[in-house]
Length: 413
Picture 1 (cartoon, rainbow, N blue to C red):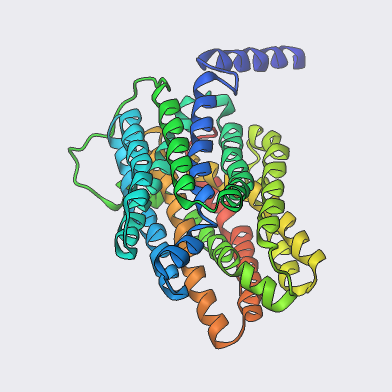
Picture 2: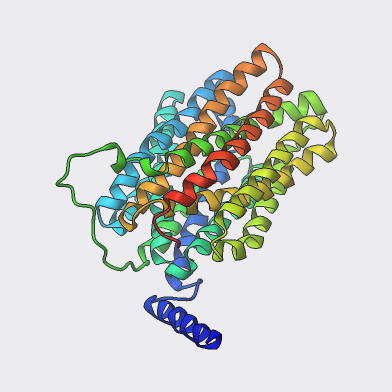
């Protein structure tokens, strides 16, 4: 009797596998989309650490003006993401993807043409819109080209392209600048890399799918996945923490720890942690252990943020980078998968944009609140606030969010 039941289970598994048109993970389209994503983020991170220096040297911009100019990019990216989720669900995804990538690519040429600080600020702010839309469109297409049985694992590994770009591109940009002292060359390199990404994405083949009908009145759920609201709220806490860290790391390290020039190495170590955890966590994602993966990531990140502020030396400084990287490498793909599994197949774009928006909103609040606390009290107080915020995020996940997801999920992969 038991043997017969095993045979029935085996037959059912074979049938499910047979229903999927592509069962391997690294199919050609998935590799192309990942490669294009690498080009997208490489062109972005190539310039990121050098733009403050460029604005200061080229236009004589003050520190507060530099902050205002660069903040515009984040604002437009955040505002665009809900609309981009609606677009990729309502129109052919490849067309939306290619238009977004084309606009993202062409704006790099705008940097070359900008002759005043005002013109640069306008171009930089507008550039955030196609960036925000492109990150949603590309990741949604990545989900589409994955086999259903490998989707959760594939979403987790997709982020490796972001992490590799984060680890390598800033160092490449700094090396090129140190060797040439030529910002124009850097803009041309970013322009060319973005073009390569556009060309790669243009070769992706997508299956026809049913589009969201536009006959019904527009509602919030078309732009934000209301069904996954608590996941988004929880992600706000984690985005807040990373917003404070990424923006005030260098000045805290210099003023509190006496570490100068260690920011690049910090993010390199953090990226190593991100890559390692995504690779290590792929089995758990493949087995559908999203809640477990998320919890492990949140705990590791909480420890990392606490070590950062509690251990005032270089060992604590770099150990925190590794722990936060390991934590976010588990946390991010788990939450993204959970949000996608709260959505129907024609709401994947909305689900993707929702998790990005919640993270971006947390980043923005973190930059603002972190700066206010640092001004009124100290940077150390700001980072203790970060540690407390992550503990609250952990508590919220354990007591509410985990059960919210298990009860509300629509699909399992």
